[in-house]
Image 1 (cartoon, rainbow, N blue to C red):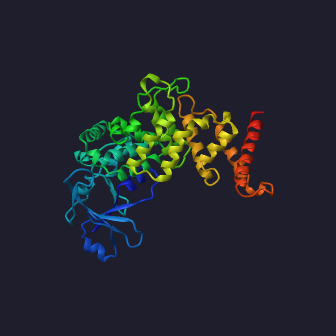
Image 2 (cartoon, rainbow, N blue to C red; image 1 turned 30 degrees about the vertical axis):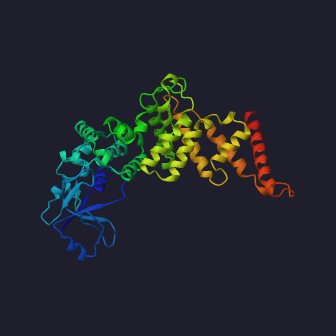
Image 3 (cartoon, rainbow, N blue to C red; image 1 turned 180 degrees about the horizontal axis):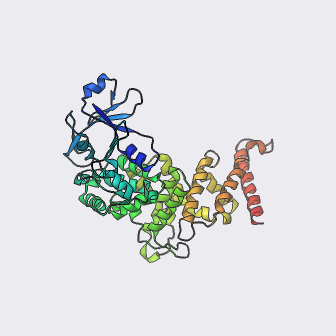
Length: 408
């Protein structure tokens, strides 16, 4: 029985990229042998075991054969005669098809180290096209390693396009698409993920609402980059640079979906695009089963982001009602996330990436003002329903004073 570290851990070890998960392949062993040594079985389709102490995954070396549609449509074969090279050839990219033994010796039958050095994401074999999930995985790797200068090999991008055009992407479950996409959104260059999917014609299949933004013009005095799709990816890039959380990044991604629905005769203006965006954001979230808290922030950013840009001109009562809709008293973190997303929208424009966004601090200061006004601050004779009414008035009055001081 021989045990090898495989996949991402070997790749990232050689690249000097941080990693946490370790996966192992076991050559020349049977399930009974691993069970006898205390390993716990977890694999349903093929033998995967958890180490009795470390709980890391150990999979028996296996080969596979396409037997159906989608990434579940495979038959797996394991026995003691399966060689390491046979196991590695079923993997997606050459940089993921390497193994390392306990002595640190690297086994690289398909040129993974060469492609690491040349910064190329290249498929291992033509079997790449048998698994549609690989389109998303390669796009995610492109996002993860963009900072290292990695590019997708032309022939691999061609195969990704063939998968997109084959209809196999339709076999991917919403949960799997969202899992890959949410992981990609957390990469430092999440915008590369969506650009890659567009390059291989997969964006219009998986995320038609985002794809529809490309080619839609905006007023150049507000958006020097003009194209709505380009603006969306630029705004997402800002969220990545700021290292904002997943909910903010997702809200930024979908904040302008309504612009794809602007009547042609109104272009390049986008009147009411905030309201028009509610339905496509809802459809996007429901189709991919996006977690509720992400959907909620995305909807309010879609609907209210222009008000954040205009915040200093809002009347005190209007500002209070916006803060109420953001659930300022119970969930101040939602207000912060909202402001972060709006700032990314403002800075995600060509040549305006470093422009100050004082609106952010204005909203945060206003939030603190209203949250610091409480029932105990009211006159003692105020009781019952009058408490709520007077609290609102106190808060609006405080916002009026805040606005006056700010303007002076």
